[in-house]
Image 1 (cartoon, rainbow, N blue to C red):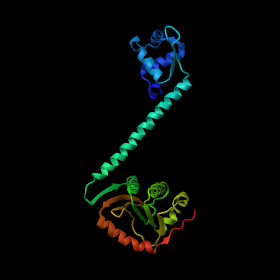
Image 2: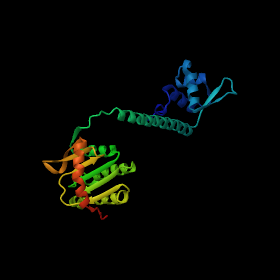
Image 3: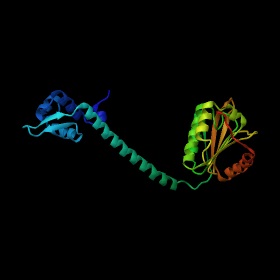
Image 4: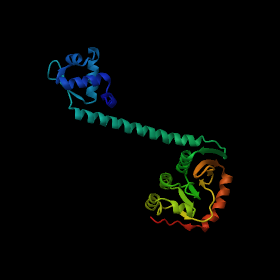
Length: 269
């Protein structure tokens, strides 16, 4: 259940504020009795409520009396405080990420060959989206079937969203698709392509016959090879992520002639 403690009050502060709503203007001693807040703590609790701007005191009366602020105003003030705290914390987190990003990149090992793999449809797509998000210079995506690279429906949209973000970072992106892939792209993917990608700078898409297999090339040093499921050809089985500048250069060399002979992609919406 929702509680005033969720908005930053202590248990005693919440108890005292609720009691004040029922008693109206009252003294600290009387509030201690009605709220069951120990007398030894009541003044600290009242000071805390005043810091939150949830009560007002009547100093002209002797002894001093306290009155609760209207609940709607009180909740708005507590929420505003939480928002400020959240914004400050997010700023701290973002600053930490910026600092750690620089530090961790500086600590990356010098080994230029490394490979890893993801197994399963979701894991494969997650890895592809992750590597697109990590690209800083160039992306090449080649797909021969709708189940590879740019998959149908939601998967295609996820990849497209990642490409848009990469373009926003200034990453050059080229996509080469087989005609079969183009023919089977659903309408909503076609519409999103027309709205978000077709006219973007640093982006080009083409289509060509005779593509077999699918791969993704990142920054000229990293290649993601998709492995189809031998028991279900319509599903990607795994993705091998290989960081090897020499292998990536060889892949790029084989890609360029096919790109040169490909036709610009034209999608009907």
